[in-house]
Length: 326
Image 1 (cartoon, rainbow, N blue to C red):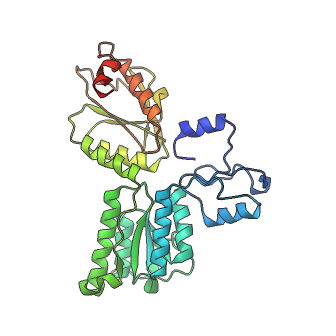
Image 2 (tube, rainbow, N blue to C red; image 1 turned 120 degrees about the horizontal axis):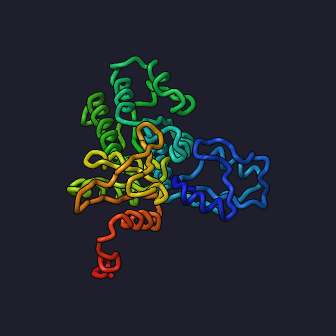
Image 3 (cartoon, rainbow, N blue to C red; image 1 turned 90 degrees about the horizontal axis):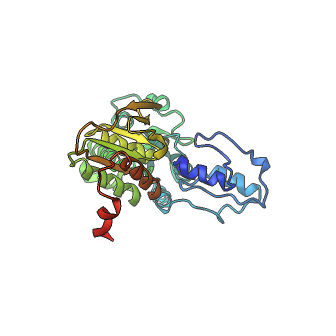
């Protein structure tokens, strides 16, 4: 349902089954579904192709549709760009469920291409400006552009939307870059005819988390603990931000904290689990930043906080700390 294994495990324990995993591998064949099945569309939405498969099976697709309204806002923005004859540049991770869904919806309305980051954007910009051969497009963006995409024709008018869990600052940098490219090629006086001035489409929960994390970076702390699903895009960005300032540990629940000496955590860059000894600094007092991804339930963060507090027997009781706020 979301990129948080604790939440998904809870749903499985209650009898829910998943049709596919997060990598798109089929767990339940489409042929096994019947009109009597209740199929829930997850928060990141789904592709038009999957919607049609479900409809062909007689399943009421929109009855249990939990697609995030901010994701739908991106789809609506894409449709509007398409009506205005703009090509849609999607800032997102090509294999992410939300980006796949957004690409499916945008490609229905307009030529569409996915850029993973500013490096991808600059490679596309070089093609627009004639600094790189057009043929490079088909190699560099293989599997990431809509059918029939013609870079010479379709990169004359562009607008940028995003996977809602990407870093807002990165999306803005990509949009600013394409504004500069179109101004350089067509002149600033003609910019409105070639660049759609779309505002950031980041969801408020992700945006709030990222803004709060930037504030946390002003804190003089000893370490940071980030709680969330290991395949969560928005959580991984929070980890990247915290790593700029603190030793940072990415965990999915309090169960990863085995003792005050042993912590199991995830190395996002190497995509592997690690174990760290003596992760709590041997000093007093210890200042710990604790935060989470937007898809992480508050109760999970609370459990991590209480687990960490077990290693500080002389700390003030939680009830006393919270009393002024109650």
